[in-house]
Image (cartoon, rainbow, N blue to C red; front, top):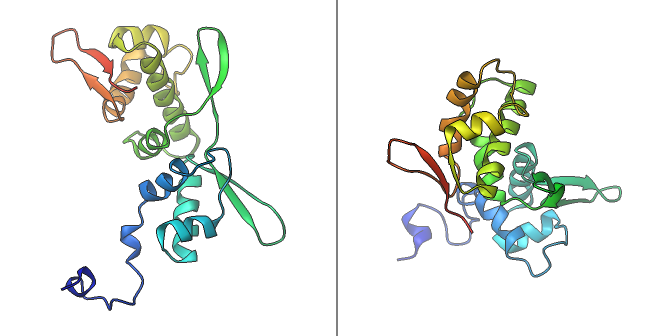
Length: 190
């Protein structure tokens, strides 16, 4: 018996849109041969076997989350791409790509606020994550001293800031907290 019979669908009916997650759409961008080439909705449709509406919905969702960027190219055409993000390193600012799954996690992080305030909280979380990537073993006091002053996100004290950012940081990919009393944060990614 086929899987489509098990879920009550006819074998010729299109798959459910629930199977087309934003993670699957991102995988289309990550597995293409030329990573610099923008994609069209048709490219995503062909790669996933989904409808045009599903491709557009998922692509638009990723644009809203800040994971993808888009622009019109002609009267009825649009392209999408994974943007290069600005990130501080020891020599100043450089363009480095961020893992799209990290951007999805930041967009979905449980942070207080809405609108511009929520965006400032996401920026502070992003800065904390980038700091941890550059300094793979960091205690929370170092975040307060090195990240909070440049990314206060509307908080007046470092402790209030950490109460919001710390738990969200823990939920991001490749972030681990040591079980020792020093609460050292580790970045376990590549």
